[in-house]
Amino acid sequence: MFIGAHVKSSGGVWNAIANGVQIGCEAVQFFAGSPRTWAPTLYKDKDAAKFREARAASPIRFVVIHTIYLINLASAKEDFYEKSVTSLVGAVAAADHLGADAIVTHVGSHQGAGFDVGLARVQAALRRALSESEGSPVRILLENTAGAGGTMGVDFDELGAMIRAADEHPRLGLCLDTAHVFEAGFDLRTAAGLEEALTRLDAACGLDRLAMLHLNDSKTPFGSNRDRHENIGEGEIGREGFRAIVNHPAFADVPGILEVPGFDGEGPDARNVQILHELTEGGT
Image (tube, rainbow, N blue to C red; front, top):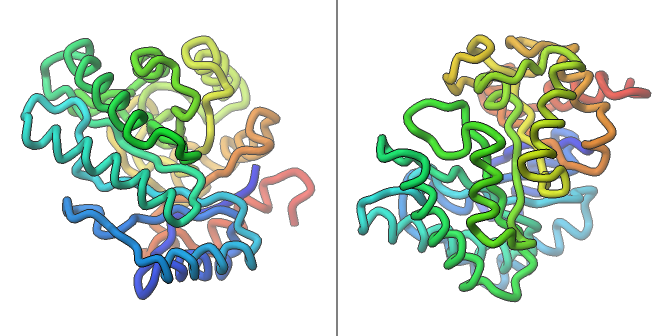
């Protein structure tokens, strides 16, 4: 596994690279614009070129854009749904312009209508996004959820159903959030619990769909269905749980992106990165 973090890109998108390198990252994730507004992000060619140059001169091996929080690909509200799909397509375009490897998105909630109803909406949204970005190398990664509020993707079977609904498109992949997995009922505190989760994931989706991890400890208890992140080793999963995660062969070539609060409350930091390196076999 190689370690990265969600970083700020303010002051120029190329700063995301410098901010990641500063805390010891080999991968970066960032928002393309404000995560709480619908306004699309359109990078100038010169800014995109500067980003590509900064990445090429850095140790950063993987770049991913996180879509805005507003997206709900299962919404029954037509105007909201249309904005969501447009935003998803726009995120792929922004990532393509920068030379990023992927985008990661929360799928949304069926809002009480039931998973099957939501799935039909998600199917149409993903098919459209993939079609409208045909030819792009950028992957669309679906993130699992902790399970509150009728969210789509609370377990591996739901993630697998969404992949199949989108015709098992090769550009469609998964991002697993460790806190969400734990909060949804897989006990990642032990190596045995991790193996069980991976067995279930492989059966439902195929391990080859796993493109990245969000490495977050959980502030809330096992099976709580409450999404609250904590710094590595300070939460319910704990250091030994993360020792098993960062050393598992299935994740050997997978980026692990931190989305933790940070020990100073300012987001992912060098200390969290260092803790993960210390837990890695042969780490110092």
